[in-house]
Length: 227
Image (cartoon, rainbow, N blue to C red):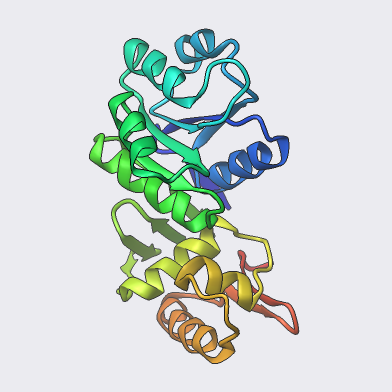
């Protein structure tokens, strides 16, 4: 099992330690090279050292806030900026955009939304986003392309979102509710919906090799290489 970062580097600036670790972990699992900072102290040095393609930036930070730091990022780098904030008033968004923010994610947010916005912002910036490889299955979310060995795997948009989510969380069991929430945005229990799409994914991927999407009985589903 390997991850190919594709040259995309992401800097996370978030003072909530649990959120910071979660974002760094999720972005790393998605194939990016990631570093985290707890606040804006040392930002300039980290920008020069790490040279990020994207900064995921919390609005409410001790010392300099998100818009102030966004201006620093814009002055020193060509990195894109996604602001993570609980503030969703129009005037707040305008202030952020005036400071150079490329996109917003409003708290609380689903990890899949942040990853989708990350891919979109990097794509607009012309940065090659990461791919995830599990055994001979290669999932390139940025290019919306899936291959297994030398074969192209033709998926619907929903099947691709589901496979990307499983790939980003490879080797982790994802419950039906987690899948519904992250892939469809539902918080209601609709087990059959997930089962139908998992079956379709299995049929299409197993046409070119052994099973990679496994059922953890009573728990959910996991994408992992054959043991």
